[in-house]
Every structure is written in structure tokens, then in C-alpha cells.
Length: 136
Length: 137
Image (cartoon, rainbow over all chains, first blue to last red; front, side, top):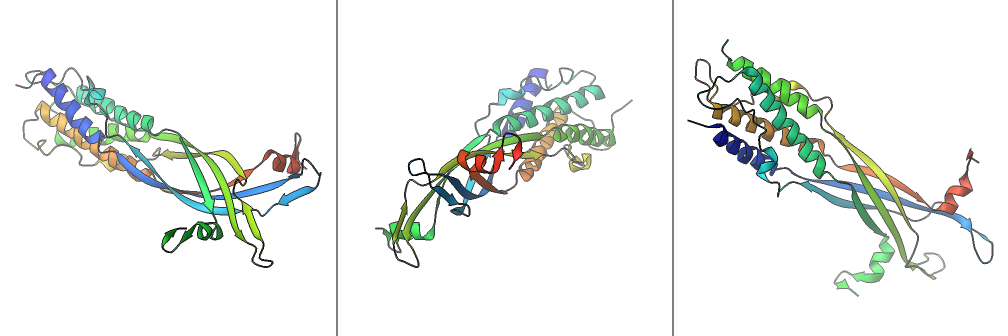
């Protein structure tokens, strides 16, 4: 006989295990154009670099949920679901809706804002520091 | 009324689909760019250095969502223990929901796609050379 406590524990461990599989590495490909246009603060001359340095960098970003606890699903199984009880359709509907909504919310919460620093070297910059055999 | 397999399949589609359509997340990406130039002028040969060259930061926003997800994405995602004429046990319901969670995670991962964007990082002096408080010069 599966009691509610048994099933609630199963729901937590099974759904938690699935949520922990959430791992996505994707790419931010950033092309940066620096545009400088201003006046020299000492001599007053206009400094223009309107088609200034540009570069592209690929940065990998990872969203994942490896350490989520099973208890995020505690009591998300409807309390009417257990052996020996009449299980109504609405109990099943509520359970599906609650657990899935919880899953989506958990994923959204881990998709946090990110800050990236992009050091965009030119080839000439790179080759001034590195040879084919490594760092100069 | 006895709940049928068809009912169960309908529930997993309707209610998992609705939850998945709730996935809508905008992520801010703050980009700080450092341009470093170190090389020789290709015409006159002079050494050009800008080792602590222009830097700038800007925020970009990327939206990940599945607001138009179809219910049918969950078609058949109920446990194999749910069969026509069979007794549906409570554990079968738990197993079915587990299947739906697995499917939802996979579908959300599929929506987190690579992004490419161009960042025109102006300095204040740049911006004010083109814009006044009343708009574009």
C-alpha cells in the first residue's frame, strides 16, 4: 500500500532527479564596436575613431541545476493521491499542473543575469604576445 | 466515472502544456569590452599601442520563452503502467508526472539557443556628439 508519504517522497526524488538533468551550455557571440568621438581635454582637438576597433568573441554560458534539492517538490503531489483512496481526476490534474509549474519556475530562477568581460584582441595584438610555440 | 487512458493523456498534455507556456525569462547580459591594440602600422611601420585602450559596458537583454508551446508536445507522456483496462496505481501517476518533468526540462533546454549580438559601446562623449537631450542632432 502506497501511503501519501511514500508517494510524496517518490514524487520529490523522481521529479528532483529530472530537474537536476537541466544543463544547457549555449553561446553568446558578441561583436563589439568601440566608437570614440570627443575632444581632447588638454589641447582641445577633436579625436575621432568612428570606425574604431572592433572584434568578435564567443563566450560559453552555462545554465544548470545540478544541486537542486528534492524538497523543492515537497507536497506538490495532491494530498488525495494514495492507495485505498478514491483518486479524482482533479487530483491528478492539480498534481500535474503544480509539479510542472514548479519545474518551470525553478528553471527560470536559475537563469540569472550574467556579466561578461570581453578582451577583444586583434591579430596584431595576439601575435605580439604569442608565437606559434607559445608566449613570447 | 472511471478515468481512462485517454483522459490521462489529455491531462498530461493540457496541464503540462499550460505550465510550459509559462516559461518566459529575460536574461540581462552585461558586456564589458576592452579593446587592446598592439602592433605596427602597416604603412609607416610605427608601433601602435593602446594597451589600456577603450573600455565600455552595456547591458543587453535576451528573452527565452516557450509561450506558444503546443499541448501535443506532451502527447503520450504518461507512464506505461497506465493501460486500457488496467488498474491505475498511484505510483503510475507519480511516474507519469516524472515523464512530463523530464520532457519539460528537455523542451526548455531546446529553447535556450545560441545568441549573436552586436554591441556598439559608445562613450558619453560619443553619445553627446550625436544626441542632445531633445534627440538626434
